Length: 59
Image 1 (cartoon, rainbow, N blue to C red):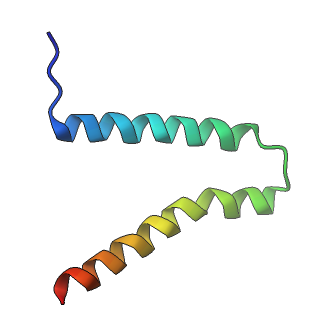
Image 2 (image 1 turned 90 degrees about the vertical axis):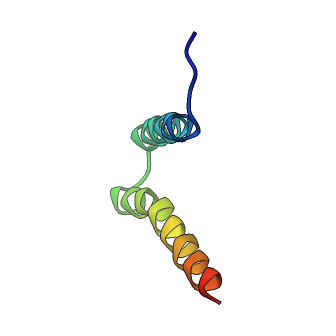
């Protein structure tokens, strides 16, 4: 029986989300400039959330 640890479960979820995001971005039929902006957007959102979390956790 396979028992997943929480860290392994997180990696599996992020892996599946990444595959889904890549698949969606690959099939979009839009301008390449807009596609590149949309591709970077999730990384920017995660960076903003991370920096905000660090600031709030210090106070």
